Image 1: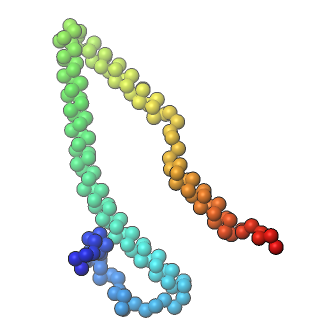
Image 2: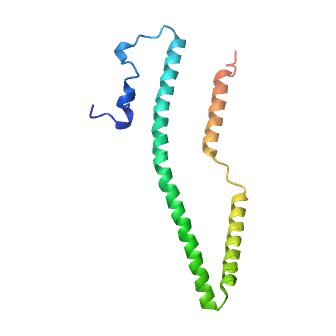
Image 3: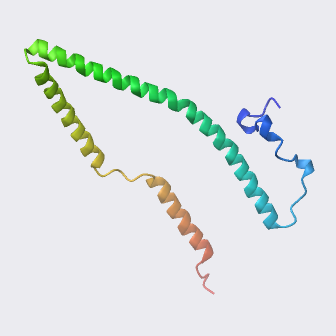
Length: 148
């Protein structure tokens, strides 16, 4: 099957769980058919959830390391900046440290104010489409009188 997309194939160890199409019988009623459909969708979801979890786990460790190295670089940069300011301006190191701490505090407060500002409502287009669909479905349920 060279034309088949690799994501559409089941892993070899899990493919044996499902009967082949010629081994299955047609469902006896709609409840049995619906149950089979739902159970197959749940099985596919479980397989894909395992794959997504392993993929996410493989990205978490490098992300944590990247954040740790970035924080360490920032701390060293601030320490170097304290030395540079105290040397260049003739301030004591603790005066330079307090000045940088005040700058960081000011930036932090500004960021908190940005976060607290009223956010734009998410999914406005999607909600509008769902509202149109709901009205359309209600119109189908309760059709207007045709004048009879």
